[in-house]
Image 1 (cartoon, rainbow, N blue to C red):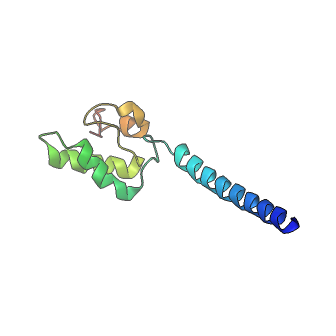
Image 2: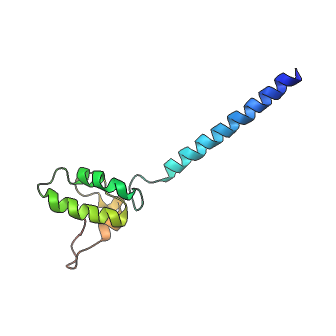
Image 3: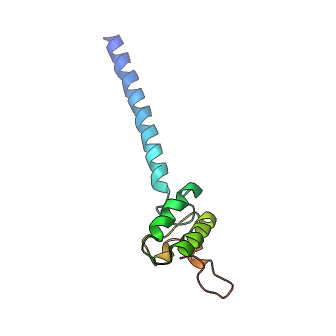
Length: 103
C-alpha cells in the first residue's frame, strides 16, 4: 500500500511539472503580439511583405519598402492596405517630404 501511495504521489508531481511547463510555454506564445513592433523575426519579413504587397500593381517598390520597414520595425500590418495603426513604427516612419515610407 505504501508503494502504491508513493507511486501515485510521484505521478502527481510529474504531471504537475509537465502541466506547469506547458502553461509556461503557452503563455510565452500568447504574450507575443500578433502585430506590432517585434511581433516578427527578420526571416519572416519576406513572406509577410509578399502577403502585404500581393494585390498591388506596384509590387517591386512595395516589396522593397515593405522589407525595409519590416527589417527596422519587425512588424507588418494586417491586410493588403491600411491597418497601419497595429504597427506604430511602420506607420510613423516618414519620407523626407513627410509622406508615409512604408506601404
